[in-house]
Amino acid sequence: MSYKFGIRILQAALILGVSALPCFAQTVDDPLHGYCAGVGQCIDNGTNSPTSANPPSNFGFTVSPGPASGDLLVDVLAPNNEPSSSFAFTGTVSGTATLVSSTAWTSGDLDTYLGISASPTNSIGAYLPSTQVLDPGATGFFVYQVDLGSLTLQGASNPNLSPLENISGGVPLASYIVGFLNEGTTDTPNWIATANSGAIFETGTSVPEPGSLLLLAVGLVAILGIGRRKIVTA
Image: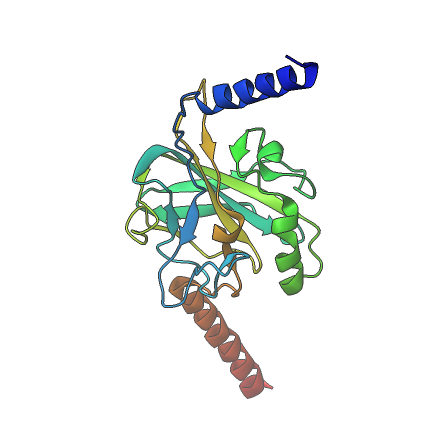
């Protein structure tokens, strides 16, 4: 047997050996995708899931495969030139999203910024360009987070069911809302992040709540009344 012929036999044996190894199926969770109420709202356009409704209403996230349960964190990514104190969540679960860090997220991946390991990692390059179209002064995001606790997210074919969340007073123009679902445990987390194109992107300006509008109207009436009295007594 020649040297070259022996090498060819060895190569063939290795190929056959590898192909004969058993195959193991692995279930890989797809990222979360945002949804919200209203015709034409929060539709994935390949870049993000925009909504012109502000505040966004009855929003939440799906997961594939679903339904799936875990601890759900929701983050509001507000342009860093529009600082806020907090965001109040109401709906299926109530809570308050508070500032994660006084240092804005301006580079790298969101999961690294939050100190977790998630899939996908959410690079800032997937978010900031769209924000800067509407808010050119933004150079990053202040991140506000709320832990909504253990929830069951529905599959991608069953959106707008649960959870259904609202944010009192709305969010700044060009903000994002994203979710993180921990399907693992506290000690051994398995974080499923939001697909970049599934992030809820706010393209509308916030509308004052009815109570605020009433207070504004009362204030205007009072001002007009004072003006009239001054004219009469002049």
